[in-house]
Image (cartoon, rainbow, N blue to C red; front, side, top):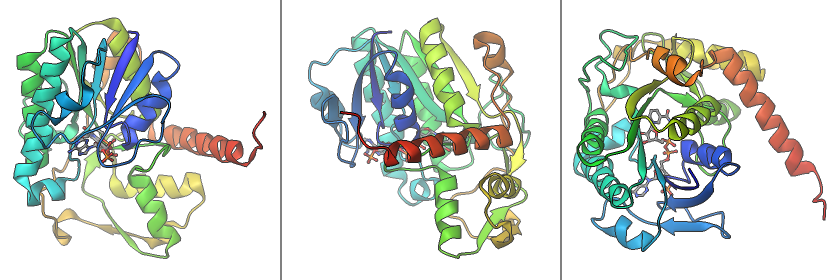
Length: 306
Ligand SMILES: NC(=O)c1ccc[n+]([C@@H]2O[C@H](COP(=O)([O-])OP(=O)(O)OC[C@H]3O[C@@H](n4cnc5c(N)ncnc54)[C@H](OP(=O)(O)O)[C@@H]3O)[C@@H](O)[C@H]2O)c1
């Protein structure tokens, strides 16, 4: 693995992958609407919703690995605009898969735990997907395109993710923190369970999977199954915030455009067995996030060396 293209490089996951991969490979980055920050590198602005735009924007670039994170990620927005969700998440992924295949590159596709219906929980890679909403259906359609088109491929079904914000787009803990800072009250579900994944673990898993050269579907969750509410309380505990402004609610008490699954927790035994990565639990991940954020803040305060 010498040259890597990351799509969605301005996204929360994409920025963290770029940070981890910068030490390992020559990077090219594809963005959507955000302006490229890394001017000195290979950067491309494109719109996956427009057919052939990806292929035209990248010109004759050649890479040996494509990490495709770009997607329409909000379940509610996907529900409101299913045609756009299909264009970006399914047809856009088809175009990226063809592009990767034409270059004999390995395609690493980011899918989601929301391909499952949430009735069982602790899903492993052999369980049958049955998405409840447009987001899950279009991401699953993206998986099917990758399986149909690519010779070398990895599909990562990612759980709800958290960690250090490195660019313009943050994770859901950033929205939570901003709301708390603004003095707002937050409603968090007590009956929706996930295995939140620390993004540093995810970046490490992608690196190991890309290196090992094996095709496969992998579930990337964290080491602990928690409700949103319990996650929020642990977040407040680690970051010293006031948890009293979290209101525990059940999903049926709130209005959502997209139906949400109850328990999409993931079984991560396969990544532990095959690449030796045991994902951290919530408190450990949040402590790592806090340390990283403190180090970034310190670096921002330090005067430049030259
Ligand atoms: N974060 C999670 O909790 C989570 C959980 C499960 C699965 N996933 C999957 O992980 C991947 C990354 O998610 P994320 O949290 O990093 O999302 P994010 O922060 O919202 O970033 C999405 C990225 O996709 C790009 N993008 C969106 N529409 C595009 C379009 N039409 N053309 C080109 N680029 C477009 C955005 O570009 P601009 O910002 O430049 O417009 C951005 O770089 C996604 O595939 C998502 O389905 C995420």
